Amino acid sequence: MTIAVFLEHHEGELQKGSLGVLGKAVSLGDDIAGVVLGSGVKELAAQGGRYGAKKVYVADLPELEAPLPQPRVDALAQLVEEQGIDTVLFAASVLASDLAAGLAARLDAGLNWDLVDVAVQDGSLVGKRPALEDSVYVDVGWTTETRLALFRPGTFDPSESGGEAEVEEFTPAFEDFSTQAAMLEQAHEESEGPSIEDADVIVAGGRGLGGPENFSLVEELAKALGGAVAATRAVVDAGWYPYATQVGQTGRTVSPKLYVACGISGAIQHKVGMQGSGTVIAINKDPNAPIFEFSDLGVVGDVHEIVPKLTELVQQRKVS
Ligand SMILES: Cc1cc2nc3c(=O)[nH]c(=O)nc-3n(C[C@H](O)[C@H](O)[C@H](O)COP(=O)(O)OP(=O)(O)OC[C@H]3O[C@@H](n4cnc5c(N)ncnc54)[C@H](O)[C@@H]3O)c2cc1C
Image (cartoon, rainbow, N blue to C red; front, side):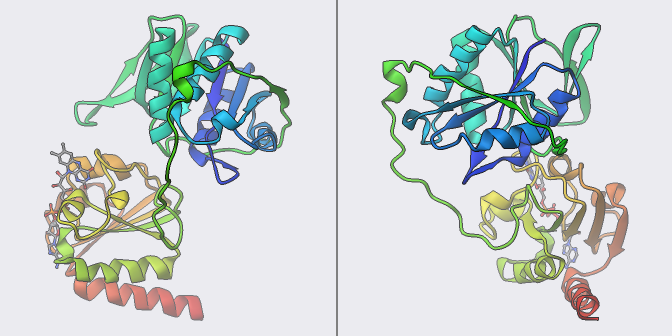
């Protein structure tokens, strides 16, 4: 099995999700390569070696500067064909999902997505993914010679092995149609603190907060704990908080060490986005709320009373 992992980067850093997938790939075999595509990205290849890649293929060209999928489809398709790569793994993101879909069409290759694990069983690659609204896990395989897989964000933590990678540059030929799209503008949401995917601590607010003005309660607790703020879909749909913070089936998947759920009922669609969290603390005034079924610590009470006291206690502990 010859496996390549697409190493996505942003602002000069390889993304945590890609490095996690690289770590998983390294646990499957020895012949693992990373692929870095971009402009001015040669330096990033060394980072791939530190996370276990034996080899990192780099295409460093102006056509690959903007994070657009089509030129990357050309580059990866060429690499797969020239290097005899049979498996390409991606950490899901907007770019990686577009790229994997384009590559599947170009190579007529099978693409399994939303995977949460992968293993070699009797010489074949077998993926694991949730099904039926995440109530069961199913094993999935590939019937094509080239196998593509997208993993859920945050599925694997990167592990630094300290190795060095052999760096091999390549120059893909681009199709005429691949370089026709231009990135005119990129918008970045301004936010303080860590993103919810990277945060070790998340304080999440639900409809139990009663209104958008009360999100300051979770923001203050998150600030005291050095964490990020997340929200439920009910809250996001009501326009109380930005969509980018939604955790769940149709939002982000997170796996912090600590997840504090404030006024959240614990619907299955929310649970699937945060069930990989280390410790879950729930504050809810309804003792029968489903969230208590998968919390490590449950507090039955009013968020408006409990959350400010908790914030105060955390602040006091930090001072003393
Ligand atoms: C296809 C589909 C996809 C979905 N995707 C997602 C998703 O990605 N993410 C997601 O979150 N949801 C998703 N949902 C919606 C999900 O089913 C729930 O409706 C939603 O998670 C509920 O949000 P909530 O817990 O904030 O609100 P509610 O269910 O209204 O719960 C509010 C909770 O707050 C408690 N409460 C009220 N007042 C207080 C108080 N003063 N103090 C303490 N507790 C209080 C209540 O007891 C209650 O348990 C999806 C639904 C569908 C059908």
